[in-house]
Length: 485
Image (tube, rainbow, N blue to C red; front, side, top):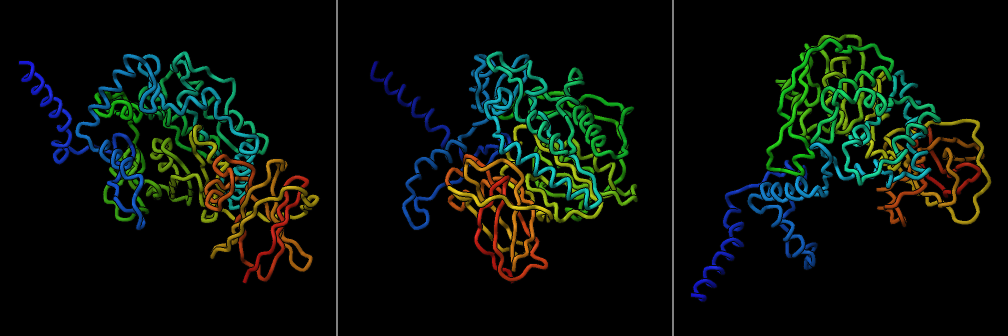
């Protein structure tokens, strides 16, 4: 009897273990639920050599394709999150059913404080962009969107202690010192938070929060605009939150979304071309599918004033799209933290929207913009001790000059000078630490950030050999020579 019991037990055990393999050809997992690409099937050989990571990569591939993975994750996370209230799947299970991304806790508790150099880099970079936009006849406004926890921190678990100040506060303070036009969206939303402006189970604001944000942005631009103050609305329970899907990919929760009764102007897409149903295409771009929405442009058929908008945005900008399209004849929307300032048409307004948790990115990459030429700038004394690391790349569109300063370099405005036959041309560089470029160049500690600079010099009118110097504060670093045709 005992023998038969053991046999049956082993058979059941093997059946359970082999069940996923049996179902794999018939059950496909939806990668969009977890908002990431599934692991690829690894190869035994890689670049002509034995793939030593094959077992680890195969395990990842197999785990991503286990049948009923969403249902299994949902069940496990419900036990850990809803029952034991422990962070799981990068999600914080807050009070009263509120969910937060786990990385929001860093800004909430200020455990990811940006350095003084990084804060300086963000503010100065924005001031240089605003200068270029205004010189081109447009208006500029910087729009940092607060994390949900920064507005509804009372729903965070008690064991997360809110800091008195954080990166968002310090960046806005620095922007004020540098004269940058920005929207204090944190205050604008907090003052009306009782209306419920963020989703409980999504990391983003709802359409009511976005409408308040839109009006604050247009006021910040100083542009006359439609306020939609009298628009009626209904609440439809049809929204699956991104954090909810991360925690419980198989469902079943859906929450209310504000649906406004607004008669928008007729418009068309100029990019991508050939869109036959603009309304359906816009709804797709406003969803969390994130398909083909990296760059697109629209034309309002009922506005003929030549108004133009360029909006650098992230996922928070999705809910702003219909309002912006409804107030500009031409509008371009780009998902990026490296906007193309050089390509802006004359008179284009520029809105730079980015969520609080990504602010540090602005200190790690310069926009695509020619460095402004400066006069009356004298270099400091030649730097002694450790020198700056300087790289130059001559491209078809200009000369890219970037690098890293030693740790003891002053935090100040950065100037790049090209000297030929005793005459110098000086340009102001972005004081950013080009994290990705420097890492590729093998710069030590490039992943940790630091003090750096980046300038794109327009080659027009330049030829021959130039001596390169980089000045910051009271120091000047020699950068060798640059040869231009």
